[in-house]
Length: 101
Image (cartoon, rainbow, N blue to C red; front, side):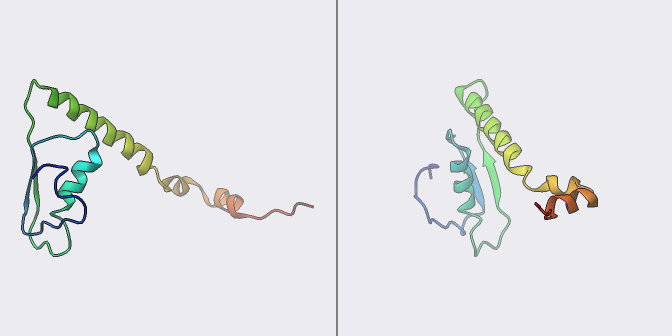
């Protein structure tokens, strides 16, 4: 089945092998297609394969997809981890309400 086929809400828990043979510009489309096999009711390990032809335009698309994923991970992964880098005094100053008078 093509990446864009099937629409939303499709469960493919009968399958445990996902083969991506066509690339899409948006990495979320591929992730959604993979997740169709990871739905509730899946009892087996899911194996995911990506088929790429070397020396083709697909390689360039794949580089762009990987670059987009890395950028997304940089913006999302920082999350709230910065708060663990404060010492106790800095945390107290952060939440302390000072008298404005």
